[in-house]
Image (cartoon, rainbow, N blue to C red; front, top):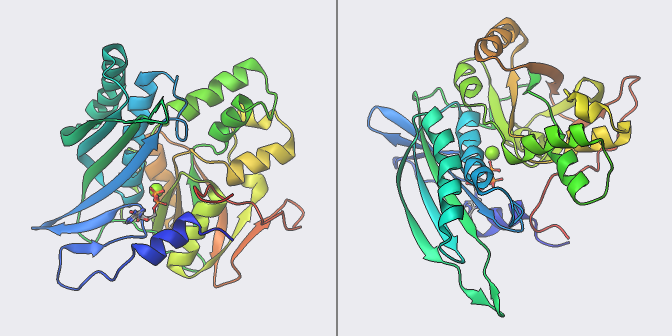
Length: 329
Ligand code: ADP
Ligand code: MG
């Protein structure tokens, strides 16, 4: 078995966070939480590489948008309000047309949330074996959250309801279509491609769920894997009603097996997956309504038993579906 991305982090980089320091929550969640004066900062870093996270010839405005969006999505998972970010770039060349569009896409999103670019680093990607090294974008985003109000992956309790925002699986369908492994109609592909290239971080919903959600994660690597992170950190199990998974009209038009695969194990959704006690059901729905985002109750947390996927008639669906792991073969 190759070392997985998460085993690698656990084995080589995860160390105890000493008591009394400013790091209240370190490795293992969507954001680190840092105590700073009276407040708490939520900090997250995400790196995007050409050829791995985006197509090298993709619209640079979309790349700029997505590089920041995936970081704001982690802040949203913690319930934090975006404040500023840092941008590190390794560029094969200084292409001004590309840079102008990249900056336009990135700042349009930053300005929407009053999130200020506060610094960064810029370097030239080296030529390796006669080929340009990959364009690499790393963003660190900093948000603010009232002390003790941050959501984490821990905190889900048996009996809590499991909710997800928006719809799942569209980005995965767009990717599969691009790879030539599925055929879908042109309009559906266009809609799904928008979800893949221009993900909308659920910043408002993340903030509105403060004091309501008992645990939260953003779905970046697929529902099964990301729910698995909540289960591991909260030490609970969960049952998910597969038929209840929210799917767009585009996804509902493809074969049921493909719908399930995209919604359960696709990546790049950037929706919020969260736990809330049944008594907070009305509060969850009111928070979502206030933000103009749909939320769907898709299951419940259990005392143990791992993750169980239930079909309409009860039979268990294939649980071998995996989330995205950078080091899986
Ligand atoms: P997300 O998908 O929310 O961005 P990841 O799954 O990428 O989170 O990372 C899981 C956790 O591991 C996070 O808390 C992240 O900060 C941490 N992490 C990832 N890579 C490293 C690393 N090289 N060193 C230290 N921590 C890391
Ligand atoms: Mg995350």
